[in-house]
Amino acid sequence: MQSTTAPPIPLQPATPTFPPSFPHHLPKIELHAHLTGSIRPATLHTLWSALPHPPPSLPDPLAVLTPTTRFDIKTFFPLFSTYIYKLINTKASLITTTHAVLTDFRADGVVYLELRTTPRDLGTGEGKDGYVRTVLDCIAEFSSASEEEQERNPMQTYLILSIDRRNTVAEAMEVVDLAIKYRDRGVVGLDLCGNPHAAPGDEVRRFAGAFARAKEAGLGVTVHFAEVEKDDGGEELRALLDFRPDRVGHVCHPGEGIRQEVLDRGLGVELCVSCNVMAGLTEGKDDLMRLARKPIECIFGPEKERQRLYEIFREFETT
Ligand SMILES: CNc1ncnc2c1ncn2[C@@H]1O[C@H](COP(=O)(O)O)[C@@H](O)[C@H]1O
Image (cartoon, rainbow, N blue to C red; front, side, top):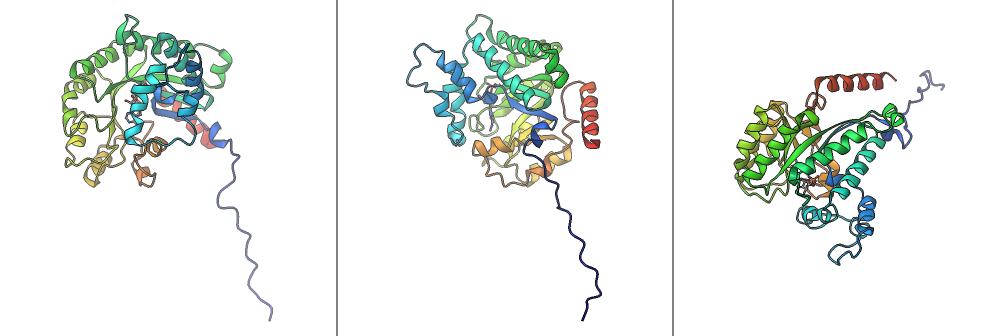
């Protein structure tokens, strides 16, 4: 018997296929990038190669930071203080690496960047002030450099200054002072970063005054948040929320109550998925995505930037 039903309509592919270069061409907003954490091993290798006699404790970055090297929470943080900072310990190396990082972000299609860094004393006689000024000078120079590049991608870059959890209250206050001092040169916020095991329990509360001062001055506040599980009944996370952050970073192990509070407060969540996996904070299976909201509203920079980004995305959606 002949069938009377119509032949099935061929299905359209569920998702269109994009060329592998597609993500590269997307305009991007980068809100959680540590300056020293964004340097390519090849750039570090160039600095290392220029050392007259690299000590055995300072092996070639290309051998230490291979594409397959895996870190965990114990090995990740010492990488900065005992290794990378030893390669970036002069004004010249800070300039080289900052320029390289900015070049990479621009090449990757980042249209809006909030770069963050922990001010260090490089022994130049200018203290941490000199460090911040050098980074800001690099950003200014980069932003006004090549007209052709500017036309292709006029990446707007702002700076967030980080307090390291190991800092004293006085050191934290110095970072806030620098952030306030250099606001008119593009410092837009304050961050709390560093090894989450460095200050146990509610010890982060010692920074309450520093963050209150930053808020009073109108700076944006972001904190590294719930990167690891802590056995303190949520005490540290509550202390961090008392800083009234605008954004929180990582949010790997908040626990249900705090997770809900992050949602209720409408905080911007910097997910940092690849870093979470690289640093062994999660296996990348968490349902973090539902916490990612309103990234543009949570930008610290000026309102006109927000409007520009909305326009870029509207334009992108209609092409
Ligand atoms: C799980 N990921 C992370 N969690 C917390 N802090 C992190 C981090 N990744 C980097 N840093 C912080 O950023 C500094 C390096 O950049 P800057 O010298 O400031 O530019 C590190 O020393 C660490 O304190």
